[in-house]
Amino acid sequence: MKKSLGSGEVGWRAAAPIWANFMRSYVTENEGVTIPEDIVRLPIDPETGLLSYEPVFYEYFKEGNHPKDYSSLPVKIHQPKVLMEDFN
Image 1 (cartoon, rainbow, N blue to C red):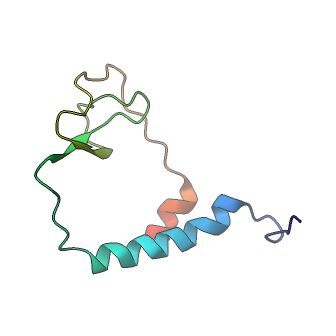
Image 2 (image 1 turned 180 degrees about the vertical axis):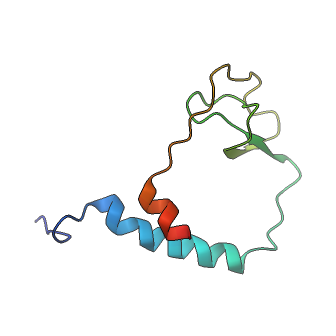
């Protein structure tokens, strides 16, 4: 049986503040987390999934299992307004 989330509410809008609160507390509690030596952090073009010259989006990969080619597209940043407001 489907239940309404309320007038004008949709899943992502209702879930975003909950997720932001969880991530804020998780990051605060886990600042000392050590990344294993065989994990690398690389800038990725979110459009293509390839390496990016512009470091605006990062992903973690197991060493040797990451993209080798660089994207030739300019990076487009898609940031949902509701998520950015929740982090401020």
